[in-house]
Length: 634
Image (cartoon, rainbow, N blue to C red; front, side, top):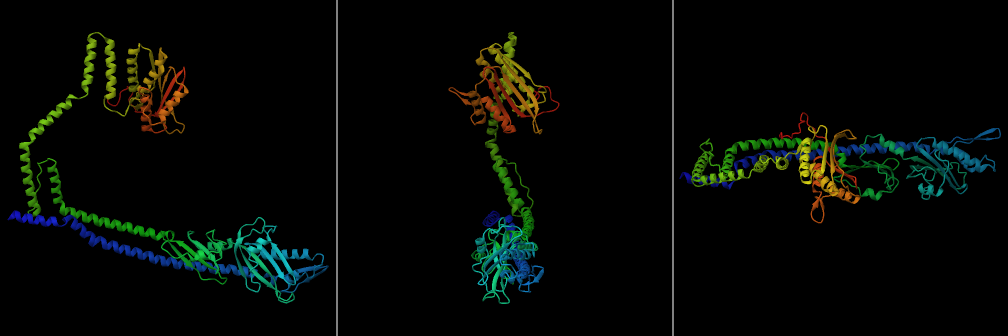
């Protein structure tokens, strides 16, 4: 009955989630989800309120700019009335005649008081004085013009600029100020959209133009009171100055436009001076931008601002991100706490699962502690019983066979231990000594040391003295075979303290003999020199090892082939029978792999003189080791 009850409880536990996941899920649903939802709501609400406040502030700023532009234009409105207030006098002989108030400019244009022979010249001079006087009102005025178009006076054009003495293009001026469509009946100041001052020589800065019609208040000029129109060119930088009085972020795009969509000023230089009505109609509020408008001022201008929300909301987004970071940290702490307590509650079950894995791997000495009398305690007791039974069965059937197999494997390993080769060579050497064959003994000893060096413990670095010693033994064995035709000379001060990659000189010396001295068919010399040099940048010292031979040398084609090999990916030079220069390529690649592309092998050669191979690498120096031994003491 007890076992049936246990199985029933086990089936119930299998149908649902474990306690660990249930507890963790409860913490997430009850604790984390509401916090995340509330924080998201507050963050979005904060963004929305900030958006409203930002819109309000920018609308106020735009209204302020529009009002400032109106105040600015009031100045030019007053200046445009100067034809009625201009005080002027001319000298007739010894008498000075003052023209009547409101009548001065009409008399200059009609030529009253001038001699007929000098009328045109005097009128041009007096009008230049008048236009100069108007221009002096404000430093931003770059040019003044007066166009007379009256039945009685005819057509007369007067232009003046203190910044240019040459007016060059009347047609361009008329097109720029829209003279053909000018309302000659208006007695109000008119604004001409921004345009370039290309009609004056040397002036190209953009200007907007203030225009006002001049009327004969006495009605003495023809049948219509209209006399002409005064035009005042104002540099657009005057509007820019107004915008600088407001503390904007320099990330907005501003437009100053009239009802027709003519752009007088814009922080976007491509829009200024064009009619952008259709473009502005396509600009709407979106998630990525805010579009703000000011009220229209007294001169029909209004300010429009377009803000990139990514820039405008940069500060609030940073606060929002910071809030999310703190929220994530709080959630992480809450989650870690829930995991900690869940793990503490479910640790006995997890411990049992881990012990089961050990049993599966063959460890049957596992015993679980029975810490309670609930379902976990009963399950632990059953597990201990199962483990003991399995251990007894395995010991009876398989342990003996396994131990026998392990013993056999150990014996096989000891049989193939590589030191048997060294022992064999030593026996041969001792036999040669017993037979008084010293030369053979020395050859075997040199070969044994080379084999020991090649297949002994792998070391990344050895002392340069040790490397030179191996080269000497190689040349010794070589001379035993070729009757001493190779003379080896070495010069390496401090070689015991300089460390180099293992086995980098023997392949180079072998190449010097095989490809340099051997074809010479006579006695040859190989010189190995090592020197420590300073780099030009002074950062790191360079170890330069030079291997020189007086062999047959190489022509340019063979030298180019070597250089191509060192720069390429091939392991060596493929000839008709096998690969050549594999050792040199291997040494070059190892040095570059260890120290970088700037190091490696450099080869120079002259036919009939010999070959020089330089190995370049950083200095690796160890203090206090000068006996030529490597790290193992050999």
